[in-house]
Image: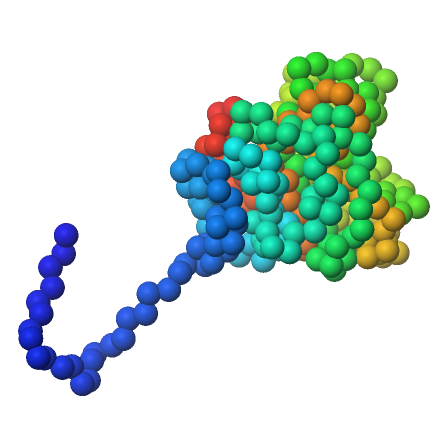
Length: 280
C-alpha cells in the first residue's frame, strides 16, 4: 500500500495540477447494463469488458446499435441490451414466449415469429447500411430443423434480416433475406453446428459471412424498405418444438466488411470462447 505525507495545517494555494478520476469509455458503455444484470458472473463480466473495450479501441463501438451478449443465469438478464437496456425495444416489445435459460445459455423452443410494434430506437435504423450478427447452435440435438428460424427479421411485403432457411434435407443453412433477394450459401454443413454469421448491407450490396469468410453477396435495392413502417418482425425464433441455442446477437449500422473480418469477428469469437459458449 502506498504512503502519503500529511503536514498538519498545511494549505496548498497553488497546486501544480488537479487530478480528476473519471470512468473509462468502457465503464461508461457498460454501466447501465451491469447495473441491470444481477446474475452475470465474474468470468462473463471480465470477458464482456474485454470485448467492448476492444471495439471501442478500434473505433467501431459507435456502429453497434443493439448488442446482446446473452449473459446471466435468468431470462430477464439474458436478454438485456448493452447499448441501452433502459430503452431496448426489440426483444422487450416482442416478448419472451418460448425463450428460456439452460446452463447459462438462451434457448428458443417452439417460439413462433413474433409480432410487435416497431420501437422508437428500431425505427431509426437505416436498412441500407444495417448489419445482423448471430451466434449459436441452431440445431439442438438433431439436424431435423426443416423450418425457418428468424434471428432478426423485419417484415413488410418482403423480408429483411437473417434466418435459418427451410430445407427439405437433413440440414438447414443461414440466409440473408434482403427485400426480395435471398443471399445464401446452401452448402451441407451438418458437422458444423455452432455458427457465427454476419449479414451486412452496404453500398447497394448484401453480403453473407459465415465466420470471417464471405459466402455470398448480391446487389440489392433497400432504399424503399422503411423499417419504421414494417408490419412486424421476428427475433430469436425457431418455429418448432426443438431447442435452438442462441449465444450472441447484435445489430450494426455502417460497419464495413473489413471491420467485421478484422475487428468484430475475432473479438466476438474470443468472447464466446472465454465464456464457454464456443469451442476453442
